Length: 116
Image 1 (cartoon, one colour):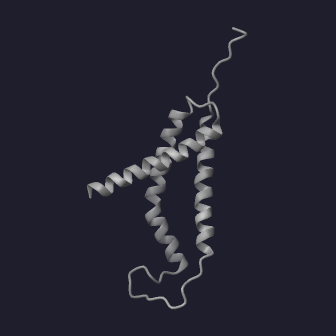
Image 2: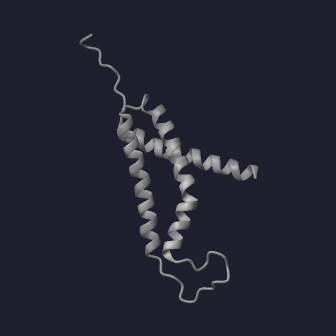
Image 3: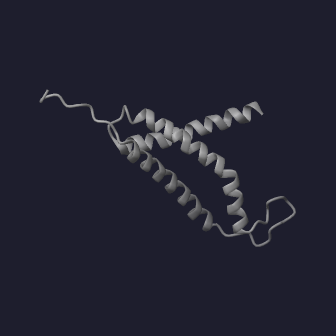
């Protein structure tokens, strides 16, 4: 038994932290890119949601993005639980589970739009 190494598993907690780091990186990049876009000088405010203040835009994003983020987190936890048993690296497990969570939510959204 001295020469046999047990298979190494990825830490579930570290893998989830890596996945959350990816989500935070993407959200931060979107906000940084969004804040650098100047507003058009002559905006037509006749259409719905065309002349929102930055606070109203953030509130709308939270209302619409909240369920999507909740779905991402739940699917990421499930995918991380499955991958942490198979992949020995926490970084790889977190990255793959973040990608897997995005794929699961995208497929669920596509199916939901197809049924409607």
